[in-house]
Length: 186
Image (cartoon, rainbow, N blue to C red; front, side, top):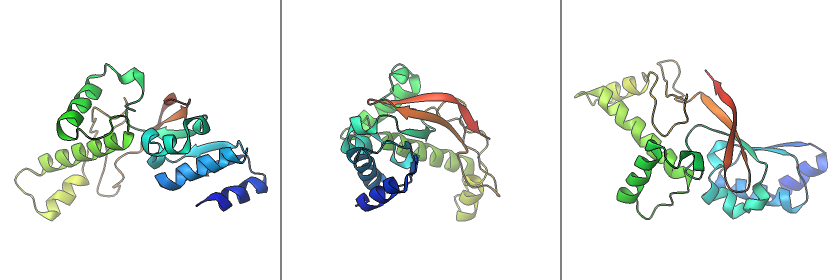
């Protein structure tokens, strides 16, 4: 567990905590921080923002106030309830992954990764050599996938392989992530 690290950090007197952990350990850190009565400003890396996989196991009430960065539409956010992209994704889940949890943002991430791969393969045409697949993956230009937050696009180049360099801040209210501020990044 990460219990001893949380206790040590609390004892140090810091007032800000960055939880840069995979889901299991992020849930442990959130729970322990709350259970010891420590309330630092807490930032959570986006790999652990899943409500179903992280925040519910940690305790929703223990997760209130966490701050993170998001880049895709949260299936738990009612602002996307009538969004065509959300409806398309929900239909895809029902057809291809009916046992999947539609409230788990990790499923949205997987869907976006697959869409990016599809675009890469389309750009390849009939040349599916490793060299061309890598060349196309390194040449994504302003790819606006429907489940990305508005204003966030996939861009890569031969010198910059990181596909997403834009984010939006969000705070957890006990039920969902609430976006705030503008899209940040390039």
